[in-house]
Length: 209
Ligand code: AP5
Image (cartoon, rainbow, N blue to C red; front, side, top):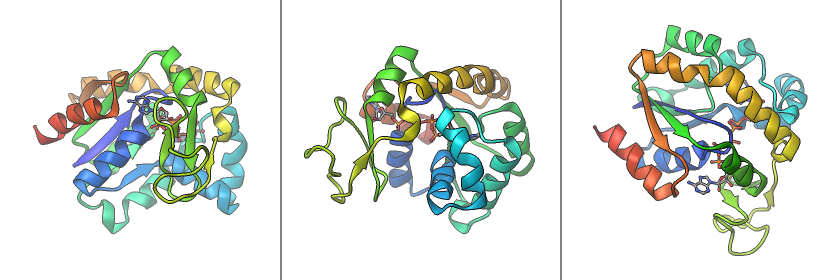
């Protein structure tokens, strides 16, 4: 099953991709996570991506497509995957279509007000990547991951100015992909304002159809 999770920042793509990945045993391939690892490791790519990401802008298409191409060539992605946060522009989608055939594009729909509430309260585990929210999904002990006891942190781009810019960038550069995939007959909308269990039930129905 080859899936794309499309939607505004904070719509729950990463949260649901982790659940789908475990349930269907396919990897979650998040370009945001790949870039954050590169930043942490201080690679050439990471150095280029760091300032772009902090501002909430998009990393250039050429670098992003190359990264995804390399990742999809690994054996664990041969039979399926969830692309979380890629493609984000029409040129990225055109490039992907040259080397992959997708099953479905799941479009998470959510109002801007909820996006801001979700991202400003998000916390992530430094060790295992588990995603929390200070109100919607709090850890049992503040600042500590329930799963691995790792430290929880706030992403650099989850500051209000960066969140607003990410929303603008999403509307200008990524939203046109909704029409793009609708015209290809691949688009399935899900309501991202409900709880993760309900969203998972909708995604399961799409996958198992
Ligand atoms: P990326 O890491 O992809 O960030 P994003 O798309 O902005 O998405 P997020 O990770 O912020 O949100 P999400 O939808 O995964 O939400 P989550 O599940 O965490 O990209 C970061 C940056 O990398 C980009 O800005 C860009 O610079 C660069 N980049 C990445 N891909 C690129 C590309 N293809 N091209 C160019 N540049 C690229 O949930 C959010 C919060 O809400 C959490 O706290 C969670 O607990 C809570 N929550 C989730 N679901 C629910 C629910 N159903 N109910 C209540 N709370 C919920």
